Image (cartoon, rainbow, N blue to C red; front, side, top):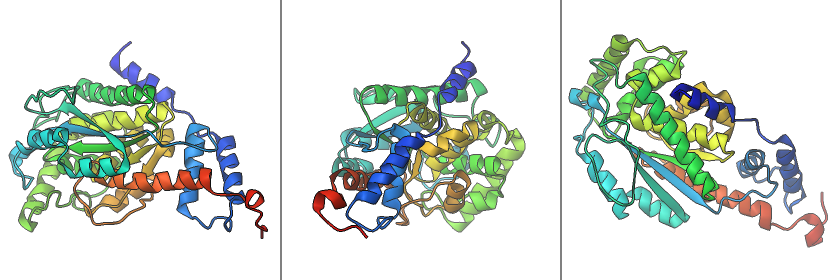
Length: 352
């Protein structure tokens, strides 16, 4: 079986939500000691999770955030405030437990899976999942970031990780990433797939100046003109102007949907991957949960393009999966309410 055939097989496993389970969950929600619908979007979470899992009382006890790491050749163009060597340094920080996502994951009782899917420099560590497709992308301002075959391999690597984690009993997944320069690639992917102007897609990333933002916009526009990615072919877009961690997250989302596992989408980079996944498999969007609206310009419109409504707006722009892990608390609160609240009948409360 060819790699693209293998990917099509993953996509073919993504089915619709279990409407009967969602309806049963809604019925139980209405039986709880509260006015109907009074828990707002927490009730929506429960119904979505029921539809995904087929369980009226869904469980999210086992949680994991997958942090995909990759490097970007476009950093040669000076689009980031940080040098490329920060990527492996931060991955080492994740593995040592010292990054923001580690702190938040510990609080949420979630596991962190750190993946080398495209780092330019090899890093040996027993806790690092080695799935490197190539040692960083090429400079997309001068040619394709990677070959189509490499993009497909990265997507499949992400899908396999989702399958492996589901097999180990993980019930709720989240997307995370690390890669200096990846807001540049994400903005290019978003601009092409959604057909929006580069000026509306590109933001400040790690906090660049006005002058460097203007340069970043010019570099993205040049990369799109140079490569002519086909907006109707998400794999072509990922290969020409994307990143290995973006492709890996695309696969993680598709794999989660194929395994009927909910997946929480983090910030701008993760959302670009989610848009690619939704374009490859529209049914996969029903398995996604939006976490937060980041400070990055264009993120709110990108979420709208996918059909995701974020729960939080904290002006965060860190990435790593931090916003998604914060959303874990709300999701767990929702399922606890569904399973632990008394019903009108059991509490002896008169129903209105």
